[in-house]
Length: 398
Ligand SMILES: Nc1ncnc2c1ncn2[C@@H]1O[C@H](COP(=O)(O)OP(=O)(O)OP(=O)(O)O)[C@@H](O)[C@H]1O
Ligand SMILES: [Mg+2]
Image 1: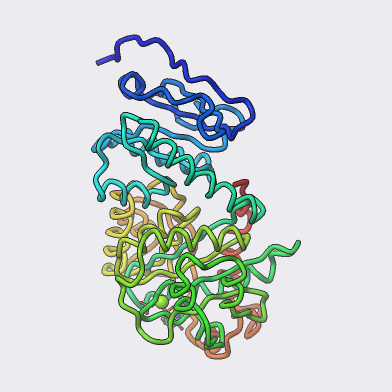
Image 2: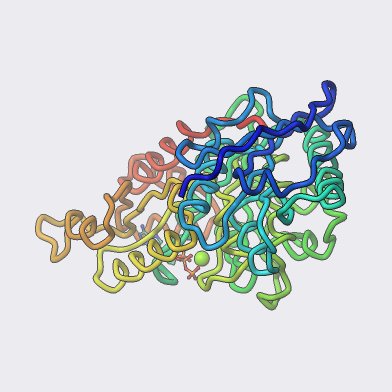
């Protein structure tokens, strides 16, 4: 059903304020209050949301944030929201939703929205949301106003080699970053994390101190709990003692990753094997996902399930690269890459050869595989992944 024609909004822009697009359906627009044009010094630009065009294409040039209507239980609406978040990285997105429940809010935050306001918009809710937005934008401004890239790694099954690959790729990336660009690895496997071990250190401070600091965590605190690897990679170690998974909240995780991506140009995160709300929030914040599997029926099957889960969560527009680990150099394999592509519904992007000796020596010594054997196949494979990630790594405006 087409919405009945409506006369377009009369909210008047306040010229000097922060420019915020307000994109609502005709119904949403008609039911909403018309806020004071001078509202908190913001420059609100309401317009009708066109469901047939990408939301990003409907934004005013120079918009510093957007309030956009999102329909609950509408796949099209959440897909459009997802696309907006991917198309306009770093842009604060406030979702306007009819009677949002706590679960709705959680889901939306997980998708990467900055805030949620109830529809129809009323002046009180709007003022509060805009105040939060101002604080957020100011915090970003103080931090230089830019956001680094977040790369996460997901494993088909435990033990597939995700942490080994991630630490190696992050170290190679850091060594080649140049131009004062900084790379950080954060071990979010808070119960069983071994990234710092693979980087040759057990730093006294790490994730636990960041989490304990809660909202006091800032750039200086983050840097004070980071250790540095010889490659130049900064890393935040998992807690030395097992932490309950529920000790972390999604909001806290998003704030922490926002802080890390303000502070560093590229942030790599290792995730726990089992999904929780906050690990999905972390994944939803990512700019790229590496999915590690092996060429075995069991591993491919679980990799497929991970892909399906990621798709079900509405995260299919985050670039996902399948990495096949521990690949044997054999002429005839029982399962080949075509079988893998068929099983996964997507191509294998990268392969890493099976070389336990070089890999385990590198991890035991906390160095890169190329410093063990520069000419090894495994060093080339890992270099290729790091190189491909760097090529697409551009610093993003926030
Ligand atoms: N390409 C490879 N060739 C040979 N051995 C490898 C390779 N990649 C990883 N390994 C080995 O696999 C073992 C497990 O690796 P890792 O700890 O990275 O797995 P994981 O997927 O992170 O597991 P977890 O579920 O414990 O987080 C390590 O001993 C590592 O040396
Ligand atoms: Mg691991």
